[in-house]
Structure formats: C-alpha cells, structure tokens
Image (cartoon, rainbow, N blue to C red; front, side, top):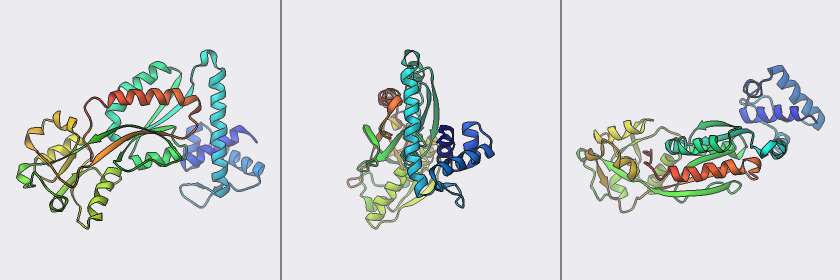
Amino acid sequence: MNIHDLEAFVAVVETGSIVAASAQINLTQPGITRRIQNLEDSLGTILLDRQSKPLKPTAAGREAYEHGRRVLRSLDDLKAGVSPGGAVRGEFRLGIMPYLSEAALAVPLDRLRSRFPELTLRIVSGWSLHLMEQVARSGLDAVAVCLADGVNPPDDLVAENIGSHSVLLVASPSLGVPKAAKLEELSRFAFVMNETGCGFRAYIRHRFESARLPFQVAVEALSADLRLSLVARGLGIGIVTPAALAGSPWRHQVDVIDSVDFQPKVNAWVLHRPPAGRLAQPIATFTEALLEGLNGPAPFLS
C-alpha cells in the first residue's frame, strides 16, 4: 500500500470530487484516479461510489477512510515529533461559524501565528451544523460553533464548552410587541433573521412549532448591522446579545422584550476529533484565546 495513494483517496472523500482533490494535493486528475485505483487493487475492494455526485465512499471506503485519516495524522505527528526544535508543522484546518468570526479572527489567529510560525492555517466559515459534519468526517481539524442551550455536540467529538451567552428579543416600539410578551403573543409577529441554514434559527422555529404556534420570518439578511436596522424600522422582532445591543447605533430605537416563557441562550464550543495528536497545542491555544476574545463585544445573532 502506498501512502500517496491513501492521500489521494482521503482528499477525494473530503472534497467530494476528483477535480477538488486534484487542486488540494496539486496532482493531475488522471493521477488522482490512478492512485485510487491502485489503492482499490491493493485492498481488493471498491472504495468509491462513482455514480454519486458528489463522490461518496462505499461501506468499505468509509472504513478505509477512517483508518486512512488516522494513518496520515500519525505520520504528521511523527514528522512534528522529530522536527528540529519540535516545531508544529503542516496544516491546521479550522472552521468558524459567522457569529464567532469577530472574536475568533483577531486574538486567536494572531496568537496561533505567533506561537506556531511553521503551521499553515486554513480557515473556513459556515453554519454550526455543517461545520460539525465537516470535523466529524475529518474534513476539518477543529471548529468553533454555537449551539442553542440544551443542544449538545455529538458524543464522538471532543467538546469544550467555552461559555453560555444570553440573548435578547428586541423590537421597535412602532411594532406594538408587548414588553412582557408570552410565546403565543410573539408568534403574532414576524422575525428578522439570518438566512436558512443557521442552527439557532432552526432551534427557534422548533420552539414555536413544538408549542403549535406559527413562526414567521419577514426578512432574511446576512449582515448583522442590517438586521438590527430593519428591526429598528419596525419590520419584525430581532434577537441580539446584550453586548451587541449596547454597542449598536440602533440601541435607542428598539425596546427589549421580556418574554416570560422564551429566554433563549447559546453555548459556544470548540470541537475536534480524537486524538488531537500534533494539533493538541494549537487547538488548546486557539480555545484559550477565543475564550478571551469572547469577553469583548459579542455579535448579533440570527
């Protein structure tokens, strides 16, 4: 069995295509195909379902992928362990959800670059559920996500809770939302939310629907400042952290709604697959710095 064949197969599984894997490991597409065929010949089984798009591993392929990722990570750990000065090298593939980007892309990344100058950082952004899927199948090394209070990460991931954060319901006085509204009263108004795909939005929808109440979204907007400005103009109810509201130019144009039976919270988490290996120290450094960064102004939630 050839390590290069294994690298090509892992790249295809993680990217979902020959084209993307070719770009990732800087090899021609025919070269990727040959290496996967070599690996299949050496193992005596088909590893990829070539009829699926994106490409997906067969049952045997999933098993080979899990073992293959561990083998490649062990090789990276070996290289790091015998490198001069024990420097951590290679890639650190980090996923960050949008709401944590401001806190995560300042102090944490600067500290990683300072402490691990030979480590190449690859940063992607996405919703929490998608990032958890990526780290679960080793497409990412670690992720920083937010989950609604009471929602826990998958058991097969190493998870560190870095804090619970309360959020506020806000609305323009012109909208007519009672300042002490129950969930049923809130259901009569539309919300200004982030786009579909946000896990926190799904949590809110579930909370309303489980009470057999309608959940309406008046406006979808990606920009946090735009969402709060739309709330201030009376287009719907918004959800915001206390720190974000305090620092917003729209804070004097909205009221905080004190709902007695709907007080949502979110928990921030850093997740990775075990074992962390050579990335144990970078992950710990990132987690520590992110915790410090979250003490600053928090972002506007969906």
